[in-house]
Length: 137
Image (cartoon, rainbow, N blue to C red; front, side, top):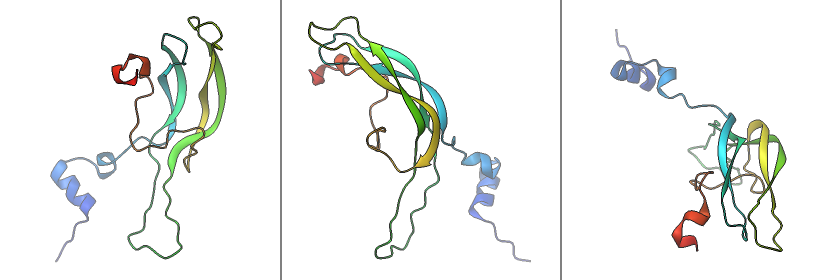
């Protein structure tokens, strides 16, 4: 009797973990996140808590490219959001001290909307303060 093992079954034998646990990534979901708010003309960086969308979305990219077919990758993005306002207390005269930031209410896997999402491969963390990085001045 010839027995063939799939790659997942082989991994279970080698690693000793259930197949589904070996590759489980968090699905697209709401998470609490600290973000930094900054504004030109205001001296300090302020951190606030908000909800953002984060997690894994299933994506398929075919091995064989077919002419005129569209390959797409879904990202975890806002399904519904609203904007909250924050007022800086340390701005220069003439600078509007109000900024807005997104608060996610619902997430889904879809195309990356550059207007509301960071669509880069690897970006700065959401709680980093540019004012505190010497080469940005």
